[in-house]
Image 1 (cartoon, helix red, strand yellow):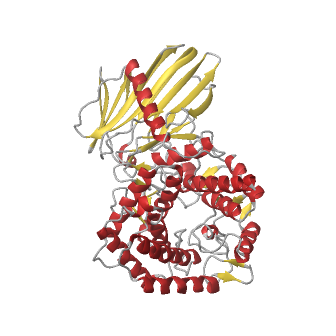
Image 2 (cartoon, one colour):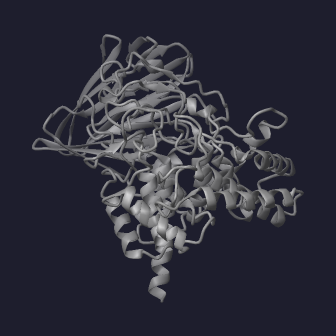
Image 3 (cartoon, one colour):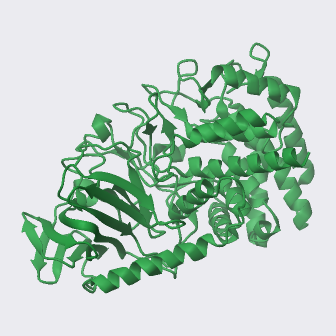
Length: 606
């Protein structure tokens, strides 16, 4: 077992309420339950010795390992090839079709021998509550039960299990054509024990979960040039969505570093208004209307909750159930991924002022009639009051989209997205014929536009810049033409794009900004930001620079991992960094692919 496998050497499985990472060596080294944002049960990815893991793999240490997904599904297959035989571990989590929040979640790990004879080894070492809580083991002929405060974890297998202290081991030898497996089920303390698995039952479960994903993906409208890449991103976004509320989390993990050994290690298992709002357009473009509507319902509910309360109408992020309480603390007993400490849970950025989120929220609500209709009259009243609040507050300095911790600034992106809020809010009011102070919103919109064009522009760089009174560039502004703030071939925008080429682009990969030129209050550096690279593709395509856009998009695909997943960043040696997989990266991939497809189609027709 690798002490710390590369972040990219994992596949993701989930049941639309929580998720697990499985390494290419057959190790579950990240799993939290009963929700994405719950305390971990397996966290060896953050501390090999203390975190806990679940290994199920052939004993042969020299076996060649390969991973793939069943096409169009979230069923992960890890293959092991050696001179003695070829074996497979098939990992998946059965989704609950009722979408009801539950404390019961099942990770299925089926095994089979494809050729020859394969000796499989099992080691199950759970460590509850981020390895802060002990457990007691009960083991009998029906399997094992790990009992920890408030939670039970049942492990059952088609082969015998043995006690190893307070953990469990096992071994099974399979010949070609034979199969078996183990099932790990978590539930509240005292919950009903699951039925022991059988070989036939495991086979039926694989087929049932396969049907679920095939039927879901059949809704896709995408017929472009990159179906496998786009559909894998869509499945990943679905896996990162908490089905009971429709809330999209930023990533499945916490604490994975943006720089190995550095301090930029955040908890991303929450729902950012920004990320979720931008996902609405991506999912609609693919035909997944139900997912887009579900998030809009969640968003409108957040607006309604703040009615009559002081402070900002929206928080930057929430728990998947809408709980705004996300206190940040460190797990000092965890050494962190390859020594990357501190390991944080919660997220202090939830309390920051980030004014751009209002633009993204209204942008989401304005994405077509099927979305706008979700806002009830009370929902519209909440939105209108939010717009009135923004008219009085848009010009405040804030922490910005990148959640800097070096003090508030007049970030150009925040101002631009305030313009988006007013512009799209006015359109919504007129289309829906709802009461609104349109004159006030129009005046605010035009004032924001003038401010950005005058103070957000650097004559020195001939470009729009990160914040007023600076000459620092910022890749978040690549969204300018997409949201309609400026025409994609406006000379000022083309000049900005050229400046970004010079200052932020490295071999087609894009940095967010230069921390040395614009200190963000944190030590260390970071890699290129994959979201920004895909936004760069989108902007290039809109600007008519199609050969460059397509080459950048194709080159970016070489940084995907072996099953098509992306983390947050790409490091200096091409390694993936940050929490994994990241929703923002995958939704921007979808956006870039669709924009590029449309631009290439127009070019071919000409």
